[in-house]
Amino acid sequence: MDKRIHEIVQKLKEADAVLIGASNGLSISEGLHLFAENEAFLKLFGDFHRKYGLRSILQGMMFRYPTDEEYWAFWSRLIQHYTNEYEVSGNMKAIRKLVEGKPYFVVTSNGEGHFEAAGFAAENIYEIEGNWLEMQCEKGCHQKIYPTKDAVKKMAEAETDGRIPTQLLPRCPVCGSVMRIRMIGEPNFIENQKAAENYQAFLKRWHGKKLFILELGIGWRNQLIKAPFMNLCKREPQAVYVTVNRGEVYIREDIQEKSYGLDGDMTEILAELSCHLIRTL
Image (cartoon, rainbow, N blue to C red; front, side):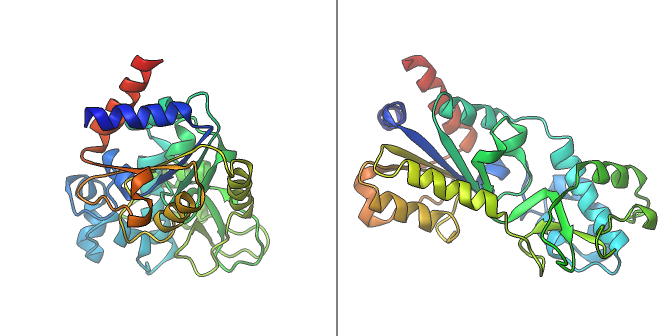
């Protein structure tokens, strides 16, 4: 591992820009596990587990609640706990250290807003499946996106027995419909076109340069981030591809000679990379 870490850090130092891709593996390393029926889930959502049979946060996110008051009770509790009250993790601090002083861009399927909370510039982040901190009209009557933070705080504080007061339901200022979290599962999901454009501008700017592609916690099935990242590495002659994951490190054969796979604990690997970088500065 030490030799590979040294080589990776050297490639990072030589890079002109850094492209980060992140998915559930990174969230899990921070203590947010969307798929698990674990102690953290039961502590936060035990009542929803008993009432609806929900076995994970992801099921709660996808569940069709009987009322809007119950829908927003779940979401406001989730966002308040994992986003509004988020304290920047050691892993996020390590990632910040890795990109320090370099142009960077983040593409993530995580919607909890941790990258921006950790100090990454909003204009350099593309959350491809939406953002918990944003809401939209459930009917899609217009394309404006609204912030959830303040409304969520009020709802979470006023929630009783798995419901929020009806008068606190966030409503569309145009048609009066109840708002929904801007996530890809919603029928009228609004794409963040500006973020998508920023991403394409980043790729265009660093085309042909030394691009360091860092992939964090992404499984081989991920066609939204992993497949495009490997394609990018293939067509960019000076690109380097580094994937970090536990138990599932996949690198396509046609880019293996310019790639590194680190299988193990995300926290330990990120700490080792950042510490090695600091020692070589």
